[in-house]
Image (cartoon, rainbow, N blue to C red; front, side):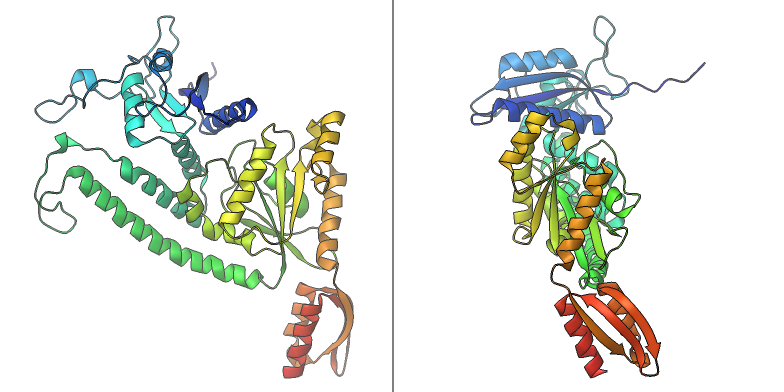
Length: 456
């Protein structure tokens, strides 16, 4: 008898199409939310959508759609008037008790479990989220909360975990609710509640203190990462940037032979991986794979990951990878441009690479080429395309190289190592005067080597 996997928690998607949002973009946004849900291990059972001039201030959607939504979750579909009733000890009374745990969802008449979560494709105010929970009887997560949950699950490095935790706490702080009936108590001792300080105020203070601690620790980790970046600053660097799941890690693996994680999931890569282009050519080129972007990426996450994104800002070349098969690719391009501009990384050399073109038919491919005549149309799955991009990257960094003959005294052999690291040594011989190098390198590299030889 074989064991079966436990059923995945069921979720309903909720979206509001606002004026000015095209049908294709709205549908793509809900598709993206469904992929975010899949990444979290959820099973999407329904989508509830409505056209509105704006989000309903109380519960996002109108009364009719709220009833439809509650039909999937087992709620009443009505936001109770007034705050939840509480007993003498401050606990919620039965009518306002918390919804069942995700492992024990309510069941419908035909035995199918109710959806335990509602995922909203917008950023909600605390009151909107609370009203939706009371009307549906389910846990409500807005788009920001879903993204934060995925980041928290996928963070591997110490730096990424610190960055995600800071962003999560910044999101949670204004959403802390009163507990214990909201009664004020006085207390002494370090960290204790002050006179007239409510439970939620104490919780918020603890969150602020914790964020301060995390920022201090993150600053130390960032200094170490900055030192590593400084050591690489004299080398040729290219960063792969773009929307999440566009194929950056696939190109990283193809170009460098690295074991970069490649998954059909959003935000599979959170840290920055740096590897050398393989096989190496006339010069050494370092390729970095960066965290992917997404529509409405929480501001606190952009701020927290700024040091990680510094890798892109300081690169000699950005390769903007786009999923050519995604119908929302144009809006994804714009999102990436906005994020790059926010970290001051929009002005340097940048190539646009449309990936996954093997999924397009001839007509779509011709239209894409006409719309973006200066872009690369490639697929990381095709070896010829990988070889073509590799050759173009080498040509980019070798375009201004010059050839020179250098004599390096034995007392300055560290310069030989630098010559190998920063250029292409065409010939190396040794005699009584030192090491003779026939070197091809960038003019700046040759100037630094000559200055070091004269000073040495």
